[in-house]
Length: 241
Ligand code: FPP
Image 1 (cartoon, rainbow, N blue to C red):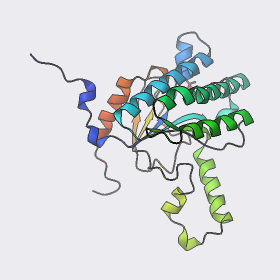
Image 2 (image 1 turned 90 degrees about the vertical axis):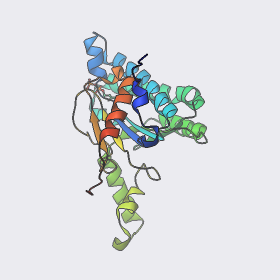
Image 3 (image 1 turned 45 degrees about the vertical axis):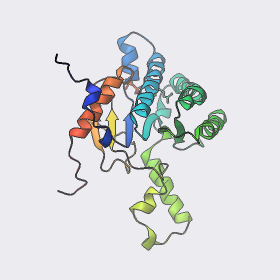
Image 4 (image 1 turned 180 degrees about the vertical axis):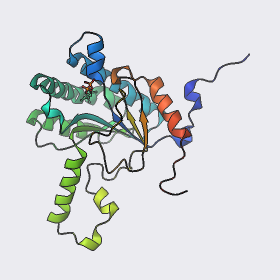
């Protein structure tokens, strides 16, 4: 009897990406296609995210960074910004129960000062609550922009009076929100857009890029597996030969 190999069996579990970055794009278009408000797309996007994080954790991926709200997203209509902020708040609250139960460590990266006090407090609570978990680290990029991150890093270096001789790539990495974490091996962007949109510009220097037409709410565990299989087909040379 011949059995077709299941997709997940094609993944080499010894060569998994350690860190995956995700630009979760296409929520609005997903909703529009169904005649629903954009908020319904974001809600479906949040559900999709939970499934993907859970699957990554089960597989043994160590870090995932997801772009939830960029420093540029404030320019969206007020109701949409409000909806996203409320969704994030309830996601963080809920994550204390569901994702924490799955051993996920949750962190927020980005500039916090512009976020409401309620969200800032919830971030601290959720981070504290999940800090001792031992599973995947999930960075939620929230009011995140790579240029803001790098600008803040430069200011810190100057303020700390660090000498020119001491400044190197490792020093700069140590001033970013992702300090102490490896750079992403794989970046996934959904919805057919092929750009970085100010996401982890420093950390993505040698990452493999995977773009798919799937809209984020439709991005399934099968699609995640396909992305990892494609990643494993690539030959990473890091500038060597
Ligand atoms: C891009 O889709 C998506 C966002 C700007 C927000 C991402 C948010 C989520 C996936 C859900 C919330 C996340 C958490 C952590 C609760 P878009 O609105 O730009 O879609 P479009 O390009 O089709 O309009």
